[in-house]
Length: 83
Image (cartoon, rainbow, N blue to C red; front, side, top):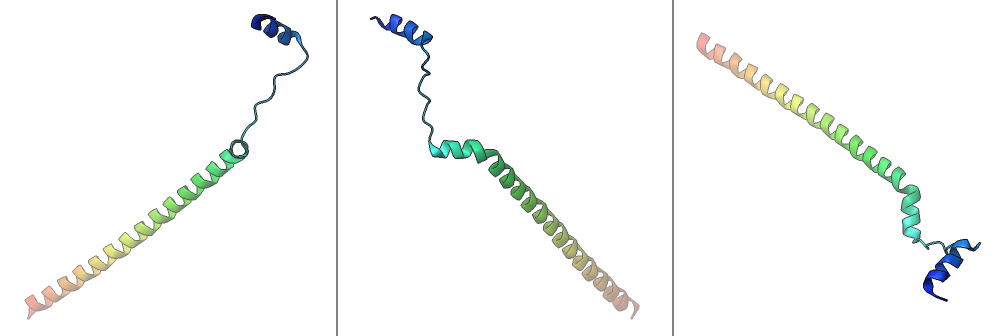
């Protein structure tokens, strides 16, 4: 029997081709890859928002301290000029 005849016979047979064996790792990531990615991206986004808020509050506090220091120095300058 030639290979071509073998393929024709197999085509009409009721047997199915053997299923490809997949690695358990591949199966896990096919099932849970998207949820893991969503949780990871959500965590990164939450961290970035929290970090941005913290930096914003920190810079506002530093600006307030600098402005208070400037106002104190202005008051001292007025006191020195007035005497």
